[in-house]
Amino acid sequence: MSFAQRLQKIEVRLSNACVVHGRARTDVTLVGVSKTRPVEALEEALASGMLDLGENYAQELRDKAKVLGSRPTWHYIGKLQRNKVKYVAPVADLFHAFDDIRLADEFGKRRETPMPVLIAVNTGDEDSKSGVRMEDALALAKEVDAHSSVDLRGLMTIPPFFENPEDVAPYFQRLAELAEEGRRQGLPLTELSMGMSHDFEVAIAHGATLVRVGTALFGPRS
Image (tube, rainbow, N blue to C red; front, side):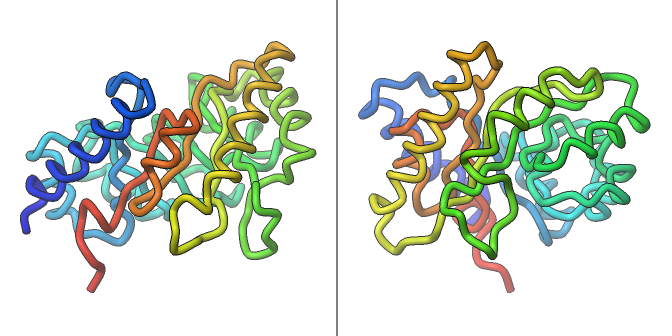
């Protein structure tokens, strides 16, 4: 199956989910997770109409951006160490996994404009996952909102995996409620990055504005 065919299938699922849950299709951005995929696969994605691509590894993003430039909107969705900000800062359009205020200073050294960021929240409180704890997220969000080198946009989560996508719903709901509480406190938490290939319809039901789809778009990894 070609990328264009897989994209069409995902678009049908996205559009149907938006209709069912009273969302406009334009309210949800589809991010194609292209980590470890060759540049040729990204070229095919762009030719098929993909606008947004997500990378997990700093040097891989740097290298792909050298070839593809600013043709895609680049999302950096992986955990980022401070010594690798230099690879991400010049090319990323949105950083999904901000979890340490010290990263803000590094972005300030590497960019002329504030880095748009989402706070990564560990909604499942899993030791294997990065991101801040639920109870610490809004405190970090306030620090980020006050920092001149970053531009707070919202929250992101990678919840625990369940075979039944509906079982993930409580974690998406937690993130949505956390964002709502933050907005009541005056924080600009308008974006919610949540949902992947098998559960993005459930995420849309709970207010996702960015869904990160890899395998369902690019096919199984070899």
